[in-house]
Length: 91
Image (cartoon, rainbow, N blue to C red; front, side):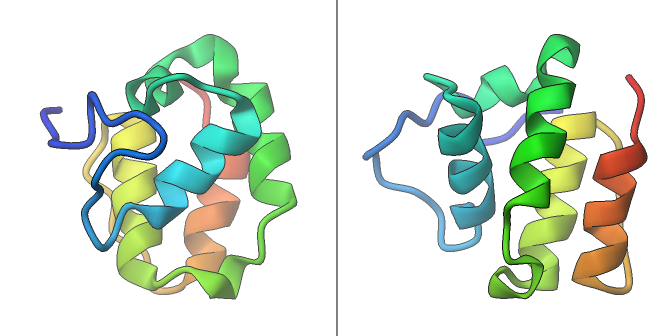
């Protein structure tokens, strides 16, 4: 999956809808957002998602974040549904 977010580092200009990926990346302590696509980080991603205020981020952000992290085209009906999917996802 190709995305303009692949090489974003903390503090760089970001798209308006990538705040959730940035937050997860900070909580997981990734240098690059693209690191979130590594299966060995999934337990840390789950821990980070548990600590998030799910409603703080738009449904579009959740759909984009889950799609980006999993590499699958995902579209959910609610933020909670997207977060739950990430919590159960296996690479």
